[in-house]
Length: 428
Image 1 (cartoon, rainbow, N blue to C red):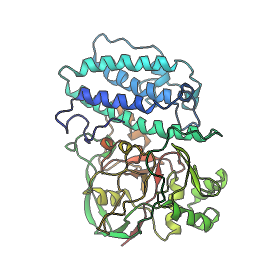
Image 2 (tube, helix red, strand yellow):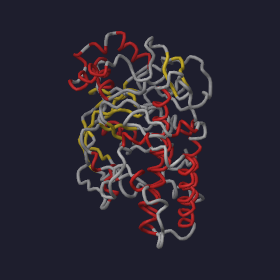
Image 3 (cartoon, helix red, strand yellow):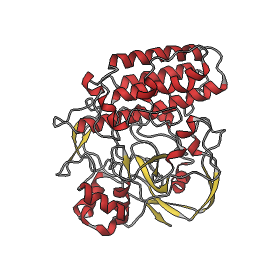
Image 4 (cartoon, rainbow, N blue to C red):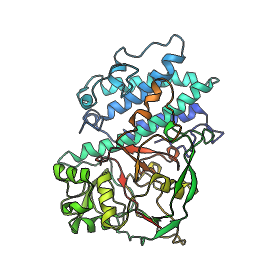
């Protein structure tokens, strides 16, 4: 991903122009594709995932569709059918190729998609190197943050793809030591309840519409674990018959476990001693955060542990004053890491950002007073506010510049292929 350390890609660092931020993000997406063979770009491993080639094209189409076409006089589309092939879910833009069939698009070729990116990049640079209209600047920031989302999806989709191959190929070799690590003891840090403000304002720099408006909520006193749940702790749940005990599962969760035959997290070996990673099959580190869990699994573990999942308000209260630092894409590790055991303040809540997205108990719903933006971009977030759960904090595949305490990710409760994990909470 782009090595932009600011939360606001263009404005927080006065030496970084919007054009430079554009170049960094676009170049990072292509750098993430550097380890791939040509055959890796086209295959789609499941309906929820997309081929790498499609990610490259769709993020390019976003700039063409929402900036170049409506704002550049005389602009001509790169291809008359790209609107159909590379639209994702913008119904107001027009019909689109079915998502589960994206892996059938052997044409346009990878080379043609890269030519498409280059063409759109040239037009965008010409637009951004002159005095930029505020509306175009705002749309460009949205497009860059959209592309950063797809950079993470690109990696998680490739991980799922490679896991389906009996050869278990690595996306790339592992960096760093493989020495066994030691778990930091789990402790619970208590927070006062009361009336608190959560959510973002328009003065906070770039934020997505679903993070607004800032509003007041009442929260009872609560306690939050000082770190994420580890592989070793989750293995104890499995060995205690966690996947055979209906009493710790939500009804829908138990139905899913039964139907899908789940017995362990996605990518774990049957022996519970190895897991598939972007570096291939690796020994399971008992001290590292467990990841690739569905909401159902996270919730069942919390019940088994005599705890619960935090609400998104509780999570945001804990994260509001915490520095945004951790194991992000820029760490170049591409896998969750054990909690830092060198901190002296044992009450400090760690791993709030990076490593794994943390499931919350909160349904993905609009904040009070929320209104989706007008036009097609109003379809970006608002229309998905049903039957999904909120996750917070980012992951080892999230760019540091992309995340913040108010960021709301969301997935269906059965989803597992993202870097999703667990932090425990309790009533105080």
